[in-house]
Image (tube, rainbow, N blue to C red):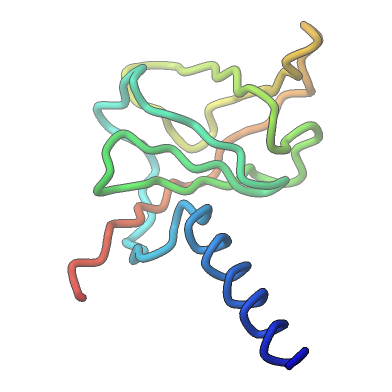
Length: 122
């Protein structure tokens, strides 16, 4: 009986994790140096200390990692991006800011952007 209860709890935790995973049910495409047509409506989510997910539409998410170690990159912080043109590109700099403080982190730079499209297979 205990084993059955633990299985149900574990299944529930996996479903919650999949629901919260911004890449669940998506397939990676080839990396890109820039996000063309990048707009201010895009939503940025810091997933962990190495991963940022940009989403503009429900169909595609873009995953980007910082080049090297990025102090201060963690969920709950806000990205402050220094964009050098109409596109967001590899090498562009960013910082993070804690919502309770105005002191930004050290500068970090974006690496390549990888698109993740919603899988059409069912």
